Length: 150
Image 1 (tube, rainbow, N blue to C red):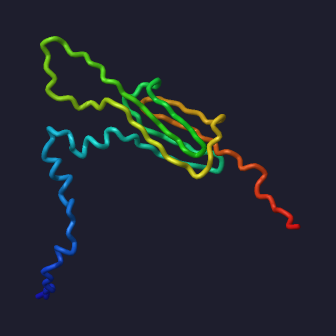
Image 2 (cartoon, helix red, strand yellow; image 1 turned 90 degrees about the vertical axis):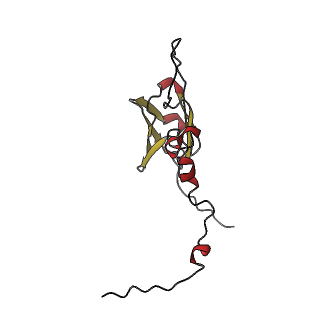
């Protein structure tokens, strides 16, 4: 028979007090408020970033977006992606909308890379809800220079 004795500590729960424990669960029970955690991820652009010696490759998921509604900005080593989905209202007279789950609005994502980007050689393509960026790294010049001390 195993001996499973534990020391009783009456202050254990007080020491680990978390004032916001269960805060998300509280709002998850009120779907009519629209504060459910499932809704929060809809406005987030998901990206995959990889690199080799000469360039970065970025793959961003933008499902349902139109190519003309996607904007990519490069400033040094910072890449910004912005997309906007407009609500198309096609309501007929006498119809009542019972539930609307389609996301409409603007999405944005910005991130910094380790090297500056050569903006002139960068390319972007968009197909089937996937934005693909090819971002060549800027050459650093002739390399390190040693200064003569006089």
